[in-house]
Length: 276
Ligand code: DGL
Image (tube, rainbow, N blue to C red; front, top):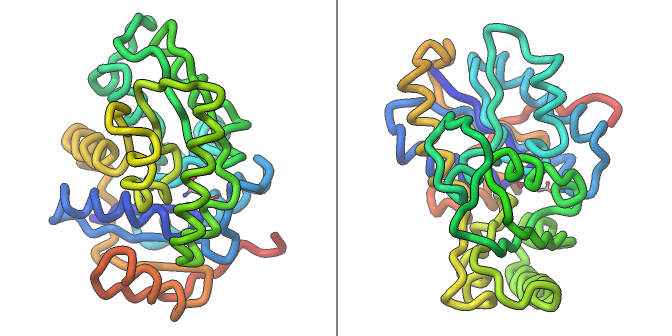
């Protein structure tokens, strides 16, 4: 039994950390497509090709269920994958829906019509590709009415985090928050709509102010996965071992991951998608 966790790079480690704490008996296989990160500046077809390649590699590792711990892939590719690409015996789940269910105070799978919710002004921070997909607004509209969403594309932030340049990352967070606040001076809630951003959560909170509730995905996704596996235990695949795969430089990715998670992480090589 193993479950796959996919991200364009290192950001999905925030989700991996939360799911492995919540489900310590489940082996997880992580795939970071570091060679092609960041995805946030790529077009939807390109994100689809890269994501499907990575998910196939996780299926080869015995993971019948794969979590796209990447908002950009969830926003730009998941719907298309679910409509026409995923075989009957496999599942791919994204990271958007658990977050939106939390924001709109819904239980998993509550498909009742959209209704008014307590929060009215929501700030969304995400990659340029996620913002331009409008996937967040689309999923929100299925569940809530009367919510004003102001989205801020946080150009450069994923690169700074992947490079380990936390001084630049902090400056970028502060300037993106300022830019958003010029358009929405008093958000009640803020969504960190990229798995890299929880690594900067304290800075987001500080820049936004203590009265803004900051939602980040890792724990919400972990709860939602635990609930899913309780209902669908057959989706635990045949894989037996945890592991870390990267299309990037093994040594440097392992070092950064060790730094992020504050425990020793050793990646092995994964074949990158051809000709992209
Ligand atoms: N961490 C990913 C996300 O959640 C992707 C960031 C990127 O590769 O641009 O959106």
